[in-house]
Length: 157
Image (cartoon, rainbow, N blue to C red; front, side, top):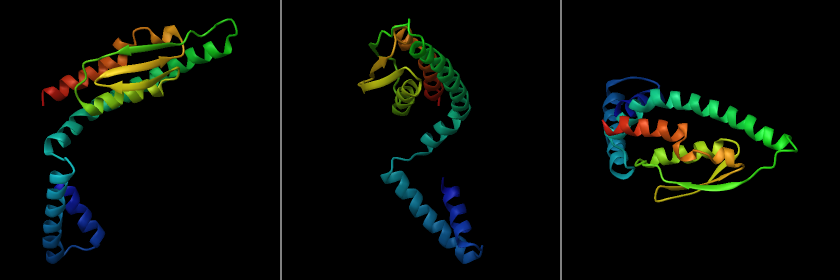
């Protein structure tokens, strides 16, 4: 982060002289210390982000596949007049300890057609599902399994 701040200083200055470099080192250090002190930044958090990049790419592909599958299922429920949806509210509590992973799970559920996360409180998820079939095994879905894998990876850091 410090190197990125210094690089931005040099880029925004448009030239590289000893004076610009010294002032940039000082200004970058002050900004870096401010970020660490008041914005809850740490080297450990940055390291966690870089460790999760491959997982994020894999998770994004899984999310896209699940969105396509749910789109097909939701469209079949809506377009088939013989099929009557049976809405259901489901609650489950996965063992997710990291706040941003909780948000990822809640948003993944909401992005998937036919389901919406109503509430997340103390790790308990309340989800509305358009049909009983969409509600089955939501607490042990591919999203939960992948997020628990990411959590295990972060715990080893």
